[in-house]
Length: 137
Image (cartoon, rainbow, N blue to C red; front, side):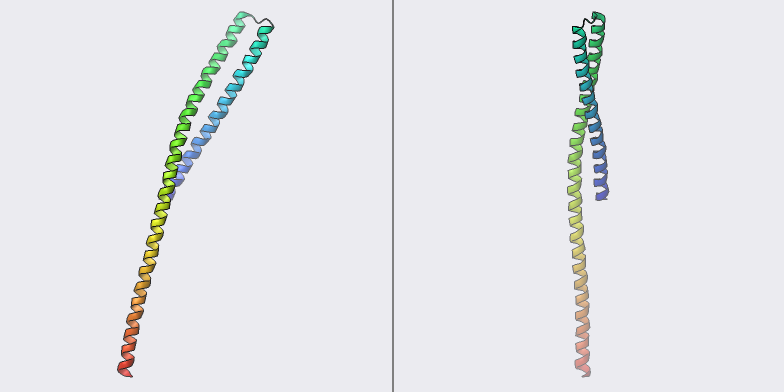
């Protein structure tokens, strides 16, 4: 059961890490696109870009910047979630190790008890055998 909980925590964290990587990649693409558009806009301004087109391009860049900001907010939330999941996973790993240790200790105790029972039975048999030999012999 503890192994299943740990596996579930690992799967959830892996999914969140994938989302985090995807968001980081998406944010990077937005940054590159914004940078590229700014460079093109500067070049076009030097070439005599009409003011209407300039405003349109700046509006589009502002839209991309808002999209980038949303990605960064999502990324921050996912990073927080991943951090919490790392803590949960670490806790599950500790629980599993503790559970395995308890299981192993109980198993050793069981085998020790079984050996003691067997030894007592052998001692009883030897006592009976010794008694029979002295009585008959």
